Amino acid sequence: MIGKVFKAYDVRAIYPRPLNEKIAWQVGHAAAKYLLGSTAAVGRLDPMGRTIVVGRDMRSSSVSLRDALVEGLRDAGARVVDVGLVDTPMVYFAINHLDAAGGIQVTASHNAAKYNGFKISGRDARPIGTGSGLEEIKRLAAMADRQRIQPAGGGREDRDLWGAYRDFLLERFEPALRNGERRLKVVVDAAGGMAGVLFPKVFEGVSGLEIIPLDFEASGDFTHEPNPLIESNLDPLRKAVLKHEADFGVYFDGDADRCRLVDDQGVAAGCDHLFAWMVDARLRSRKGGAFVYDLRSSRVVPETIAKRGGTPVESRVGHVFMKAALREHGATLGGELSGHFYFEDHFGTDSGARTFVEICNLVARGTGPVSTRIAAFTRYATTGEVNFKVESTEDALESVHAEFSGAESSRLDGVSYDLGDAWFNVRPSNTEPLLRLIVEGVDAAARDAAFGRIKDVLGKPVA
View 1 (cartoon, rainbow, N blue to C red):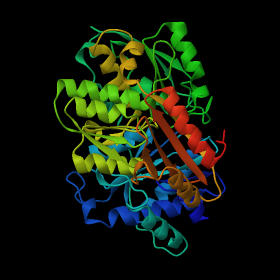
View 2: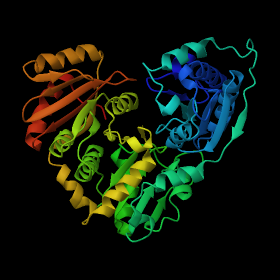
View 3: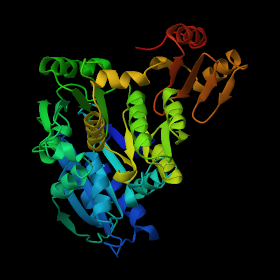
View 4: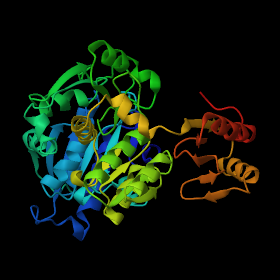
């Protein structure tokens, strides 16, 4: 069963089969062994290096999985600090706030409520994924037998950190928004996920914000799919933005580490275009520095970074690679096409709440509607990410290379090709026999011509 629940970046599966409380205990025991076994676990506020933070989302299965996970952690000698019902970025904050050895959030992110899982982080909220420790945790979990171990009797403490988390986030708001000199009307769609818990606790009472809530009730299931990349999921938000004549709207995934912007006209902004806007604003006020973007992003992103005097850093797709690149290059910001945005002042981690603050600041600092201001960064034509089902990803990639062998290419993640007036990346999915493609061109004609050539090789895209 263990092999079925470990994925590339986390532990995630359908509850109760194959993921259940037995496996939760094994994961907890293994994660504690791994996190506490490193000398890097010893911190300033936690000199014994025994503290591991645990949080959970609102899924019906999260309480029992959390309890079993905590028992596994304690049986391996960890001192558990349970921060309760929180968004995933709150766990990242808590790890750093408490100087803990690591942390685990019980969540399955944007997956349907029948799924659950564990996002594991190390000291400083460094991600634990494939290549950074998850394989070892999987190995230790497979060997963990509750009937044969002598419990080490680690402690457990419940801790409410919402006040500290609120202060931390509100410090990053423009003063004009905090004191009400500048006012914004914003529609927030939580889809029944953790943003519905987060917003009343953190953003209620901010003088410059009028929040119009959609689906804030965290009942254990989602009111609609909490995936901000599926355009139809944004329809209620679009309608509400237009109905209330809001400045903009935001949509969060299930554990609130991703945030998608909808402008004042009800149009969903590309996350790469939003990132280009963020970068442009940062580099206008503070010259220089590195900015990390995933290789699927529009070419406008590296062009904007370079134009304003920054250093563009291209990264593989995935939070493990993005966070590593941010740390390696000392980057200020990072952005993925998926809606994960990474902030130096949020420990180099991704946060939907911090992204919301950044969007508010962008809007408050300038004039004109959001739709007009983000239009400057949408000058290229894109297909968005398109999936192709193939029998062999390796054979399919070879066929693509044969078709485009004369073009300049790179192999950072899958293969990227530059055709001059169009460019594209095609890469294998981490979990399915799929190739994921994104094509961009100087105009729609160039984009469509390149896309047509690729379809001749790969066949019909899947819906």
